Image (cartoon, rainbow, N blue to C red; front, side):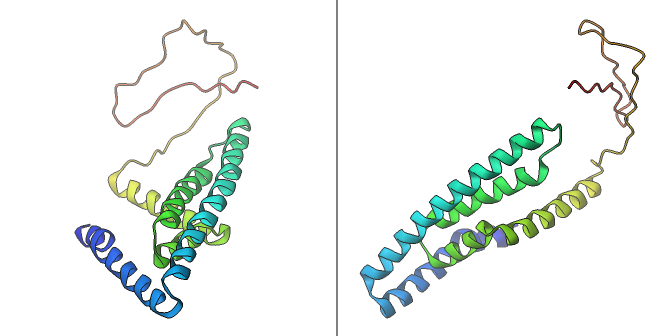
Length: 162
């Protein structure tokens, strides 16, 4: 973990400065500054547009009663993309554009979800259970909920209201 933090906070800005200096020596100072500002502006506009589309997708899934896990991870990646695109530098812009491109973002979402499942299964936090539907009993809001004192069992009732 230390190596990753070192790379992010120390090595990355140094590499970004080196790239900015090299691009500035090739194209000039003002075109380089203009390019950095242009990528930040264009990136912010694209993140806003795709963020709104992702938000609408989350609302649609929630309205259908589905869990929008892909969309939530994609929204977090869009947030990271926005930060990277607003950070001055061409390397962070490249990573930001990679996260902004829907094809690569979808692949990264799937990879992250697999990583989360593997990490949780190693810790033993994976839920394995069975939901049953009981239509013969209508529980009022004043009934006491069923509570299990076994730390490995989750017991409850589920009712779909449409």
